[in-house]
Length: 302
Image 1 (cartoon, rainbow, N blue to C red):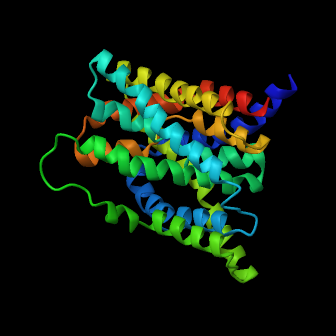
Image 2: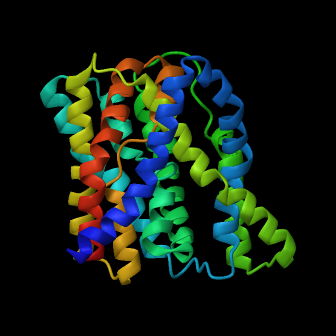
Image 3: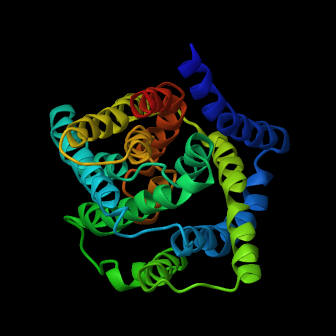
């Protein structure tokens, strides 16, 4: 009973903020999307990169200590895609639409706030390390899968490395490895700005839920189940093979249970890779998180 109460105290604030975003979007109507565009741009180009940078550059972040956790994140992302591939073939789905969302879970919008609530602010740096691992896999292997069989110019990997998020990750890793410290007042200011993106990301996810469409419900339901099940299966295998601390183990299971990321829909729209089906995978997957995230927390916290 105590475990259930603890899990509820972790997930309820997250879904409450998502719910507020959804209700606000319902009341305001379609115009809220254009209103949120500027907010999302500031969040993705300034606030989120600062959150990532300050988490990695913090004095308590140890690259060597988190090395196994980063490897676990990479293996869970790759393993989830590998397990999803035969499912896509069996059910006749386009691999380019189905597999990449299985590899890139919502470790940003949902994973970071959940990690803070579950493990405290000290758990944020480990969650960012998993976020970094997932991004590296998706923007290398995931994007290559989407581009398979397409003509025309392909996305340059260097362009991805030049994004604000990746620059902040690389900068944070340099500070962490070289043990470079920023002046305390400056670091605190950057940290406060970065942490502001956590409730903003959840609110924005709630606004996105306004677009939920059950037109492609079949692939959406399958994806909503396969993504966390595959992730948890890989995490369970790694649990018996890797030496992790109790907190790292909990972070790994939480990461594995997360639904597909909203960003997958944006990429599908950019490539015109069946965006309506990817939207169903993402949106139904985030609804299914009400079931799978508590399961991941139970595995990780028991």
